[in-house]
Image (tube, helix red, strand yellow):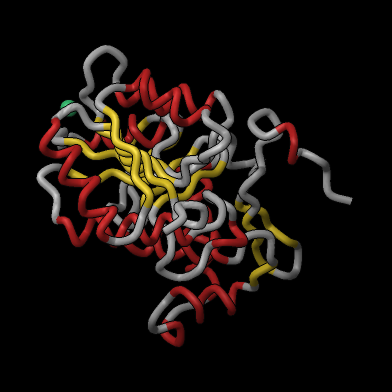
Length: 254
Ligand code: CA
């Protein structure tokens, strides 16, 4: 069988039995798999344009160059394939550091094989990373805008690398904004879309929650760049609201 149309997965893992086991199971699912034991070998494979890598499964603790440095390096080189970190490290700081260097998912060792395969399918199904157009209910875990990093699976949120706490309702509202990125949402639409019992609430509730999101995410809550007020209409979320961070998308609105 030709490997031409198969998705190419790169496994970077120094523990040989694990590397072999993951490779074997991915191949059994019909993927084309390269497996290497260190980051320099992985960097070479990522640069091979004849056989592009569609997804990377990455151990953090590797001899020589760490998984963090590897991930940071490929992102700096402009590679945007999804990266799933596989690690025995359990601290939230480790996960956040992984997301900060550009990883998409973090799976803790020991892991469940079915979960690994399900996450692989999910990551490969996404055509592009973090693009609002590709966001649909339940299809993404991690979202970035400005200096914020949000994981909707673990509820871990960081701004400028520092962890922040959001309530479940804050997360629900944030998710709704992200799913409707760029669109003007009336307070009534937000109440209906986000709150389960909107009849008990007033539009003032929406204002209070939006104020909280601004305090959490906006560099200057008085001059919001992401959670914008639209006079007489409601609110509008804009992901690329920070001109300094995203020069390519900083064209001012007409
Ligand atoms: Ca290791």
